[in-house]
Every structure is written in C-alpha cells, then in structure tokens.
Image 1 (cartoon, rainbow, N blue to C red):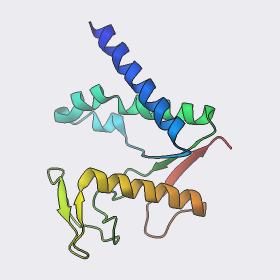
Image 2 (image 1 turned 30 degrees about the horizontal axis):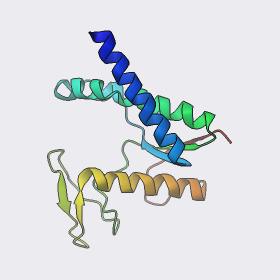
Image 3 (image 1 turned 90 degrees about the horizontal axis):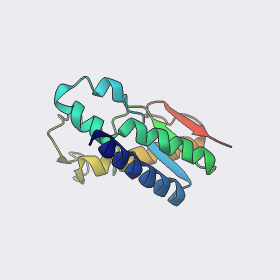
Length: 145
C-alpha cells in the first residue's frame, strides 16, 4: 500500500513538473528549507505528503534538460507580507491570516496569490538586472546557459 501511494505521488510530481517546465521559460520558486519545516509537528505530515522538496528538485533537473531558467527566492523575502500593488510591507502577519488589505493602497490580497505574484516579480527582476534588486533579499539563480 505504501509503495502504491509513493508511486502515485511520484507520478503526479513528474507530470506536474514536466508541465510547468514545458509551459514556461523561467520558473521562480521560493527556496524553502523543507527539512526545517518538517520540525513543526503540526505541519510535518502535510508537508511530507505534498513532496515539496522533491517537486523543486524535479523542476530544476527538467529545467536544465529543457534549457529553462530557475530562479530561487530567499525564504526570508517577505513575499506574503509585501503588497504586490504598492510594495508596502506589513510589519506582522501571522500564518492564520489568509487575506489582508494593504493599509497604504487599499489593495485586497489573498496571502498565497500575493506571495506568488511577489516571488515571480522578484525572480524576474533578478534575472533581468543580473543582480539583487533594491529592497529585496538575495536570491539565487540557476541556469543551464
């Protein structure tokens, strides 16, 4: 039973990573420290079941084969707390807050969608400029070029 579940998970990760690499020239990800996240006992099972580390590994090797670029954003970059509309950074935002309104520009954000927009913007800015962007945390970029 466990082998079947593992095989299903790997099949899903291979198909999803292949689709993402085929459909994009640049893939921007947050370089999460999955091993450290597994120390949180309340999240460990969900994180392990999702296979985040394996997914990123598959995206990276498939991107290399397909001559695509992967930009890994520092995990401490405030992607969830930074307003993607105006750049304001919320000083505090506990994980249970899933949606928020920017006090500067009144833009309404879903936490995860806002983080994705910010990670994409940070990754593309670094690739375009070839260096760190003012106000952004350092990122690493891997390329097969």
